[in-house]
Amino acid sequence: MKNKFLRALTYLVLGFFLLSMAWLWLVLNWNYSEGERAGYMQKLSKRGWLCKTWEGEIAMVTMPGAIPEKFDFTVRDDALADKINQLAGKRVVLSYRQHKFIPSSCFGETEYFVSDIREVADTPPVTPPAVQGVLQPAR
Image (cartoon, rainbow, N blue to C red; front, side, top):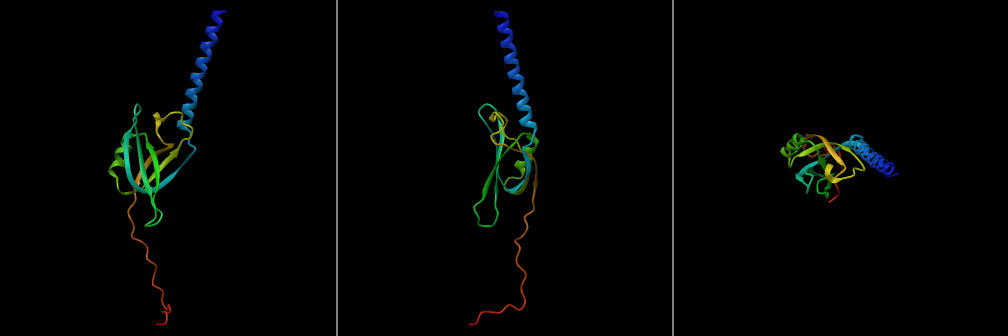
């Protein structure tokens, strides 16, 4: 009787462990979404109490003078983190993949994982072309 109980308990624990590993593999390798975000690179730091991860932020500005929206992200690759640090303060485009339902912050504090970055050259503001024949207001 005692032997059957230990065997059942062992199978239960082993099954739970295998299901947990399968879930972890699935959420880290299956993308919920992917895309790009453009903005000014603000910060990137390696942080965490036990599990150190690269966490960053870009400021996305839609129009000059508008309040920027922040986009927080995680970087898993040290070489990519070095490349991002070199672009601090510059306008960049981040390619990211979103992974939902990650069970621990050991893999990253956000669900957005950056896979690539490229610098965007600042373009001068667009001025409207001069319109010919516009009536001047009466003085």
